[in-house]
Length: 363
Ligand code: HSE
Image (tube, rainbow, N blue to C red; front, side, top):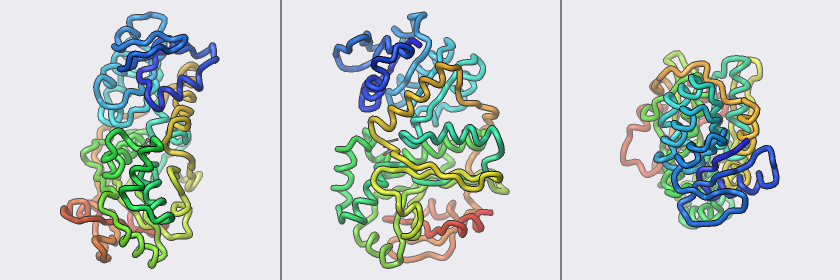
């Protein structure tokens, strides 16, 4: 393989290190804004320089942001190059077009590292879909907020210090608002739904509420109730179509979800044959994420892209999903997710959902 690596930041540098000395996957070009010298590779400043080289068969897009990442992936697929990307923001916005293009041109496209860092989540989800219908997905998909909630609950760190530590460790997005306000989790949920349900979900229909307003007082109140707060994604096939939303969720102290510490993720799929199956591991960071990118590079080298059997455009419908919520210090009556997320001006809210109970309410 002759590879153009677009982006040489935290993850790009990790991919370069993991591939060094592997002659079957040679990085020929590195796109980087900085002036630097990289042994064995030509540093370029425009992705088109790599696409002009007929030897390049694989493009690895780790630029982040929408532009020029979108154009680079579109042009690479258009010229029948294999593509690996970790760009959840860009892919969740342009999914239908790019997946259709990959399919039409027979160009393998994979994006495992876009959800769950180093966890083989999307690949496993794709394999599950090959066998039977996936009915639900849920879990913790943002390492930064899990690290923060864990540090606040177990080490008594303030919100500010916990965020600063997550940033220093390289977990947070360039703009950490994407983490703490739930947008990173929302993009990961959209991509997971697209793979799980064979759709192209309209991002604007998926509400996301994050952890920005949470205080030490809230965390102490949860502890008194035997609960732990986790920022979670939830999606399910329902009678109305697909429900999908992101919100802080209160889980029992003894649950698997409460035991997810630091930057780890725990993501679960549900299907009829297998029941619930969970995937656990580091959801953020240089080497875990680079590991998934390299797995994808080797897979597209063998011609294995993700399959896109259907790409129907759909909107999430959360009208029938009901929870009680902890909101600004008190507990509400059961209220629909749709209605709760429309409540503006609340400092913080978290769903009181117990495993099993949520399933019955959503059925
Ligand atoms: N900011 C993301 C997280 C990075 O904290 O999970 C990995 O996608």
